[in-house]
Length: 317
Image 1: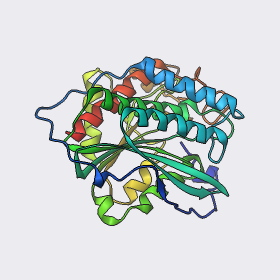
Image 2 (image 1 turned 180 degrees about the vertical axis):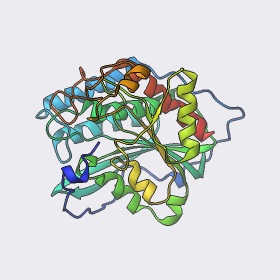
Image 3 (image 1 turned 120 degrees about the vertical axis):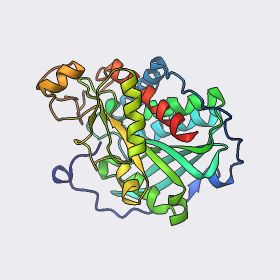
């Protein structure tokens, strides 16, 4: 998640959209039959999600300790995710842009089939800050979205709506990658996106359970999932407008998402609901070198990863 505008200047470099390489568009995919009955979302394997985080940590360690925009660690992270998706049967595209004098990349993955006039998207930013490996911020969201996409492939899910997954570059410079993507869409293409779900920091070590209060249907979908677990949620306010849902929302696309907290401190009321330590930040390693695989709460990551899949299945049928 990017810093507040007052704490960090946005990039002054112009964003230049280049071609979308490797793959076709969602509109070109053959429509699959609507699923005959409501399909239940699978349980997302925490072991698999953590295996992705271990790979992202290894990539950062081998590339100067980070996976930041324009650095080798970011491109290696993108290549890792892309290879998994390609092997699973997704149509992947890499969108290139320039920010702060460095080349950045978005990764877009379409699952064949579904109504191309009704696109459900799930996304996360893949870049870290330069000061650390970014395993909670935002390896956690990236890994959960990846494993949900792979679960779609393993299950052979045939949703009524078209499914698209995305991993954004240069979020930490001011939502550059996601804004580039949204700006590259024509008005008709934007109108086809029936919902964008954003996942940024979902494994914080002193976690909260926060739900975006943007689109009412998406918000209620997440609340229903957590209510089924007996977990109380709160409306997400710390990161409002600070992550990749913002460009979609500004373009009129319905948005929603989950968040487990950054540098705000947990109150006594929140600790009574969720456990954890009163007065300590939700993530004391936010934007720091200690944001490693040790900086993850497994329970929060597990619940939130399952919630990603639940929303993808519920909203795409």
